[in-house]
Amino acid sequence: MSAHGVRRTRRAGEEGLALISTILVIMIVTMFTVVAVSFSIHALNTTAVDRKRTQSIAAAEAGIDLTLQSMSGTVLPCTVANSLGTGPTQSSYSVTVTYYDSAGSALTCMNGTGPSAIPASAELASTGTTNATGYGNRLMHAFVKITPTLTGGFDKAIFADSFLTFNNNTTIQGNGANNADLYTNSTYTCTNNQFIYGNVYSQGDIIGSNTCSAAGDWWANGKISASGNGAIGGNAFAAGNTAGSPGSISMGNTTVAVNAVAKGTISPTPCGPTHNIKGTCSANTNPGSPPAEVFPTLDWNATAWTGAGYTVVDEGSNCAKLYTDLAGMATSTTPTSFLTTCTVDWGKQNTWTFNTDVAVWASGGMNTTNKVIIQSASAASHYFHMIVPHDAFGTTTPVSCPTGSIKFTNQTSIGSSSNPLNTFIYTPCAVTFNNNQTEVGQIYAGGQCTVTNNFSMNFLPIPVPGGAINGGSTNASGYTVALMYKREG
Image 1: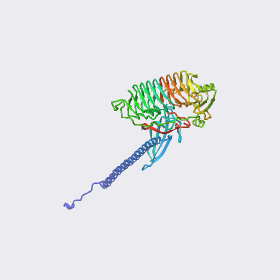
Image 2 (image 1 turned 30 degrees about the vertical axis):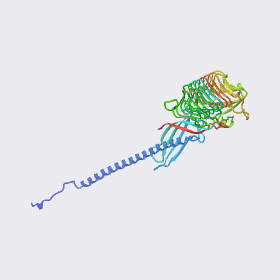
Image 3 (image 1 turned 180 degrees about the horizontal axis):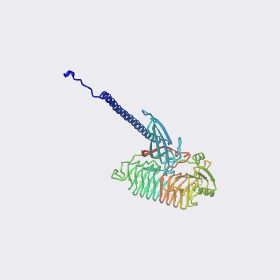
Image 4 (image 1 turned 45 degrees about the vertical axis):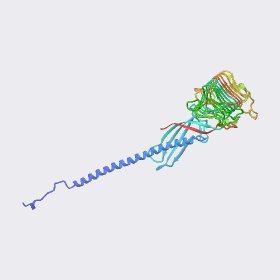
């Protein structure tokens, strides 16, 4: 058979192999495409969630920062909410602020007026969100300490319109800083182990002996004279502007951490880091007078006190009823302001316990000769106002002195760390503390203020409804806010 005569035959069953192969390839490609698209969609969703999470936490943090900024104003915010101009989706935040007093008790708060009392700290809870779909909101918390800047008359630890005298072991602590400032419109004298965590301003002389010290400045309108081993943490200024004063500074062994400036002479010299006066000495140079303040006038203002939530009880001259009603404050939960023309004798009982804020206005003055404890009923702090009004109730006639004086002798303890009572003491007359006294708050004396034999005080600004008629008020002109922590969750 010739080559041309050979006939080739196909193998059976090969007709659809190419089609099947093509379909398999298409299926594999399609499967990979579906998987790729799924991964792409998942990646896009993850990106969207991450974007929302990032924007939400950023919005929450912005809420914290913007609220802290607004807390430097005169009115503290209770809640803050706003939107941020962010993209591609808009973010917003909502912040709730909870304020606490010095004992850690929560204060009520109303937008427009702020917390019910001057706060010591605050907790901020900020929720951030966006209008994107997906992941939920984010929450951030922050905790801050708050220091008020008070205007006018009631910003000193102790104010004396006459002589201010300390004898034998006095310590006055600041309110979280060296801010327990003392002021007198006469001469300041301290002897035998005194330490003031603040500045001393005297419109007369400053006379210190036997370890009389301060963390801040000594600023006298007259002269400064010190002996013993005291220490001044700031400057020494002697203006020499009082009659007959040379305006000299004589420090003895008392050290001055910064500079000394005097209208007259300065001793000891030379000055510098290795000497008693560590900074520079500028003799025959007037530093100017310390800022002058008029003793604030404080009188009864029924509208202000009732507006602050106090119930007013006018006891008149019924002293027995006054003591009975004061004893009843051990269980009362209603802030109460008592008015009386009696001379209040706190020695009528050894311990007074207050379960709420209490104010006693006594035009007849106050005193005690017995050992007395005045305290809160629990660990919750309360305000205690001891006030002799500048004028007799309902008149413009000044309260007579020494009738309107406030005098404590023989171990008076007002408040403690376990039963805190924060006290504001005011009289247009003299204030005297003798023999182991403790308190937290402020003292304002329109006469001389004399403190002897173991006195311990912690300065704390105390709000006074209505404030002073002259010399300013206790309203805060602003706040210093210190961030303690900021965290998510």
